[in-house]
Length: 255
Image 1 (tube, rainbow, N blue to C red):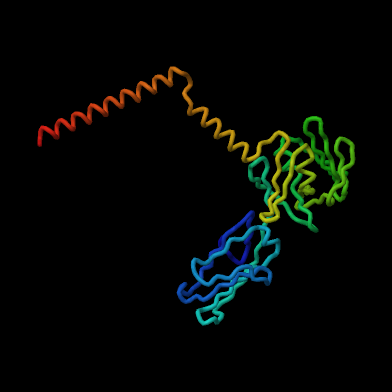
Image 2: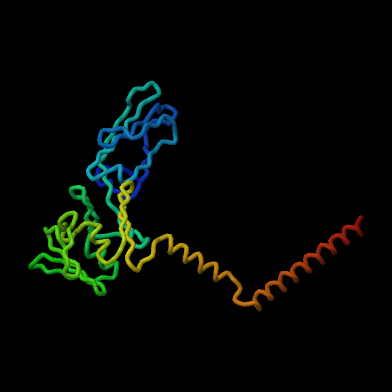
């Protein structure tokens, strides 16, 4: 990640490699601080630090302080830095016009974008400020500002009230991920919401399936093909054996 004075935002994890205008041999130490707390100190190259999203909440300040071999501070610079919550749906990283946010300790994710990615249809009632999602025999709805949603007419208590952010309905991630029978996991280290929809595949299952298909494709289609391959291998072996005999005979005649 290249730090600048504007937007330093990342998801999951990032690596920062400082560029200092003095040769590495004259650098005694580099301190990396986030919001005033030193997270790592380095005394020898290669210099650089990897950060997980969980270490850099919104509105953070990262500071790099460089000391020379004598222990004297030669430069210190600070940058604004933030991480965003990421969403993985059925093994695929998602990109949304309105990224997920954390409000009062609750992760809010875009309702329409995720519902539609899971195959649901979504409608919006401007008058009542209510979003409704439908998939199969399941209908869920929630109203902006309410901490209660409805699923097939039955009330569901929400961790936080739904909000309108930049014109997008944002609701608790767990409610959205589980509304149509899916499973949700939260990784605080990388600030990642992982959703497995009711009929979706995880990344692991997809990879295993593809590997199985590849192995099947590599198998002989029939005993006939297997026999043909065996004959080809036998013919190649005879040709190689004849070539070796010829070379030995030729060398013997020279000697």
